[in-house]
Image 1 (tube, protein in one colour):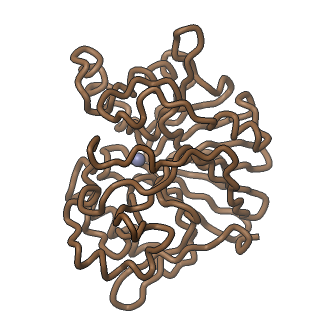
Image 2 (cartoon, helix red, strand yellow; image 1 turned 60 degrees about the horizontal axis):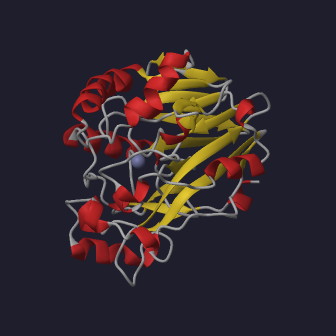
Length: 317
Ligand SMILES: [Zn+2]
């Protein structure tokens, strides 16, 4: 991973204009931690063939592929959902001050992510729920922050939702990593998940857990054993926050291409294909964890393949 990322090409957004999506009385913002040209297609998606990628450049450029370098444009972001009663965060990026030995571009990161949340009008104390679609290193980071040399939950009043299977999986791996200090998930279980558990703020949930009348989970395993997606239904519209079920819009056209980070190849393919079948041509807004700006889109089926059609915030209002 190390040698394929251009560290300097990742942009940190001091004043990123976020696109607000509206679903009835609910609002969804994207809080960006980093975004820019990242992996080469063949690295992120080992089954990707150059010829096949070239065929899709027409609709991927300029937002999702950098034609000059050939790198895929990707993002690490959090979704911020505001309902009339709750503030919900979906995935919490990489975080600040974390030791990330096997991913140097994320090691001891200092980004304005938390200040940006504040500038959106949301104080740490106002967050009610934090959902991690899975417990990979780029989805749990801001769960905690460093205070007096201790990792403490960043959101003191939030309930953190982790899928039971996901938690149990990483509890084993994470613990052994803490002992051996070896790569893997880069120690994030120890600094970004365990402190939440120990604080009593974690709730281990099933794959169909319901947060409220507008928000509920759907089990979407494969990328990791306990990967979940979040459904939002309000104002006659539906959205699905699908985490890393797809890493890049290219996987709409090629649903069988797994990312190199998928744990169970066969199950990841099956879940992705089923997901595309289920949501194509339904108008459902798809909000993935790493799709770059403009990020939100719908799955369309042109008769021969699926495609990702972006929408902009103002179209939703
Ligand atoms: Zn990810």
